Length: 101
Image (cartoon, rainbow, N blue to C red; front, side, top):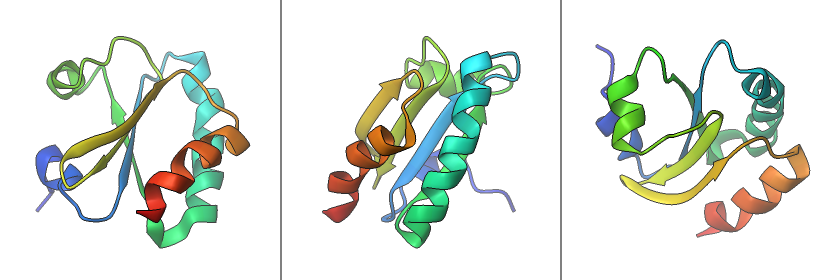
């Protein structure tokens, strides 16, 4: 059974959601950066990709107006959000303090 988006973001472990679109150039730039960040942070962070074209209701609920948009959830709460591409060092710098708590 596939978990619903609401169940997924209620996790006690932080979940970084990447709202993207297949036609989005910056999204393609961000994808390998997220993969590296996930590899570096391991079990401390789950990374989930949400296609805004296929999941318009979820994107609308979180007021995603542009892609890529990343939102970090923990226990159903938004801890951090960023629109646009960040470099790997900048993304790690933004996430690390949030994962420590």
